[in-house]
Length: 370
Ligand code: ADP
Picture 1 (cartoon, rainbow, N blue to C red):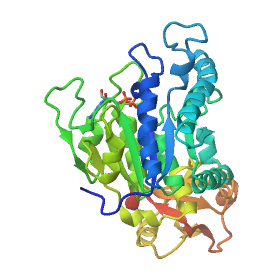
Picture 2 (picture 1 turned 45 degrees about the vertical axis):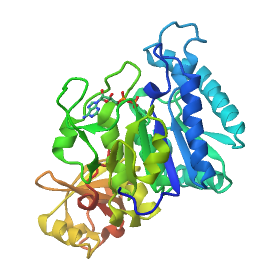
Picture 3 (picture 1 turned 180 degrees about the vertical axis):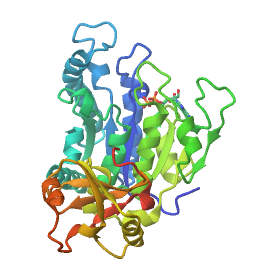
């Protein structure tokens, strides 16, 4: 048992493969089972955010397809029908238990825009405080391929970090993380406790085994990296095991528990945004000595520390910081534009990145592209 304290605020992510029937349509029975468990958590006084896929699955038949379509516009059109139908089912089911559900559709750019980011967090907080169950999904109908989360795994981890959840629960068609892809390697073993995402775990995490699933284990590991670094513990388990969510919050479910890094929970909202959501626009290469000082945490980054500036950015942009060996050190909000940096600083010592606006990768080990 990993959790000394029962979580109070949880984010639950359920994948398409766990909500659909064999034919790829949304299964009412599976929705009902999920809702029953969420209701049990709500009855215990917990705050729950549901991140639910299934919009395409709920809509493609009404669009006139007999199979799930594969092109992006067709999937988006199906989602436009399905999103409403899916919400209708959730609302109806939750209302029958006395709970109100709300819909939140998010795109990747909502996270990279600082104002929208804070706004989202404020909105979700109001909903949770008032006992509502926010149901989050990627806004499939507008998102262009290049900017898609592509799966709801990383979306769920970002939402969990955004609202300072205590636990993220990812429900899938597999009962946990294995040492290798279990659909191709019968000798793969399930891991019950993971304290660190090692290179071998990354290598073992493969693609989805099903036609409906999208991210596979790879995107789940990406999600876990975000939640771990945000001080949130994560549980990964199989959606169709009875009472899996109830057991998961009690710390005794069959599945994989990923421990959080409690020290990372101190990351304030601003630094969380810089680290995980901003999408860096350029890169500043710094001298070796400057790197050491920066890592010690004792000072800001000054004009004399800069060796090279890559990319084009305005002041206030988030940029990556690397050293001349190619290693990336962290990300920070830059006080000058590319032009200003290239013009030089007239010999004056200027703070290029303030200490408070820098987040070091070594504490978190998260690539900023996530
Ligand atoms: P969901 O629709 O729930 O998001 P996916 O189908 O996208 O689920 O991802 C889960 C699948 O990932 C598993 O069914 C399995 O086939 C595959 N997979 C690849 N590598 C691993 C691994 N190391 N451990 C467990 N599952 C893995």
